[in-house]
Image (cartoon, rainbow, N blue to C red; front, side, top):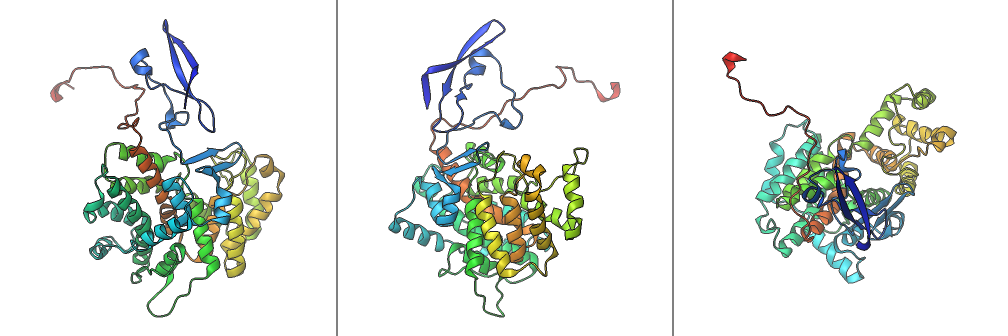
Amino acid sequence: MADDKKTATLSFGGKTLDLPIYTPTLGPDVIDISKLYAQGDVFTYDPGFTSTAACESTITFIDGEEGVLLHRGYPIDQLAAESHYLEVCYLLLYGELPTGAQLEDFEARVTHHTMLHEQMRNFFSGFRRDAHPMAVMVGIVGAMSAFYHDSTDISDPWQREVASIRLIAKMPTIAAWAFKYHTGQPFVYPRNDLDYASNFLRMCFSVPAEEYEVNPILSRAMDRIFTLHADHEQNASTSTVRLASSSGANPFACIAAGIACLWGPAHGGANQACLEMLKEIGTVDRIPEFIARAKDKNDPFRLMGFGHRVYKNFDPRATVMKQSADEVLELLGVEDNPILQVAKELEKQALADPYFHDKKLFPNVDFYSGIILEAMGFPTSMFTPIFAVSRTVGWISQWKEMLNDPAQRIGRPRQLYVGAEKRDYVDVENR
């Protein structure tokens, strides 16, 4: 909130401006520059907006220096260890942990919205068999606005609520069907007697020819992956959702925009990049070679899945994810999978090396989630779609918060123009 006693004085070109300073609940103070252009006829220059707060939010707080991630004030490690994904969804959407009755009602509403409109099956067959699952997800989610007209009016609170439930409920079905289409297997419909994570695993891996029983260890590991990726403050895809929403676009279009942004390898593809690195290493005996390359400042190679752009100490999500990875590998084993053998030994050698400890290059959530998904049998092309399933609730929570914020208006970043000055058109024969 604003502190009337605190201002920042900016002097330039003979002008002096007093800019209000806002003090957040947690984190550094924020200087309000919203009137800078009107009062000073200047803009600020901040590539990537890494020093600019574009909104107020009560959803997620990150302290990268201390390795802190809070959802509505609750530490992520507590939520991942003690809660489960749909309870965290409720927390992100509504601001408080639910009572037993509230949670039961919320889970029932999500469960009974997992089916897709039957005509949407036709959309999948319009893609080539080798289409990336993320391409399928962008198209299918965007197309939802053509099927669910009763939840596209963003001015209606009830329609916003229905759209929110539908997206959280249907995203696992869309991702699983994209996976099945990619592999050439028949679609598997959701079942109302299964929990969120178990339903997703069954839709991905069951076939009509035999019964499929979801292992509770794998289900719990998948639930933790969903939980640990549910929201991460104003990252690129969340900012994309907010920017699309600022124009008044319908919720399905906004989430499709978020999926498209997440597809970028610098954002949602980190765990896929980690597995590709493990494949490049190939065998355990080559690990010292790659560790030496990572330590060589003249070599552009770096260990994917170690360190984090935001977390300068440790990734608070990694501890819980490591526990799940250990449980999954103990269940499924690593003896027949050279990639998992490399992963386990790389983790061991890196954690024992003072260089990585001093540089705070610890294994992050992407390293462990990639190991888990590989062990479960997912191809790397499905890693980012699973990330999209997880992050949907975060996008929706941020979208709903933005629509309820009276200070928000259509996004319009400024620029530092360095192109040509005004010049006159020249006819083609005179050029």
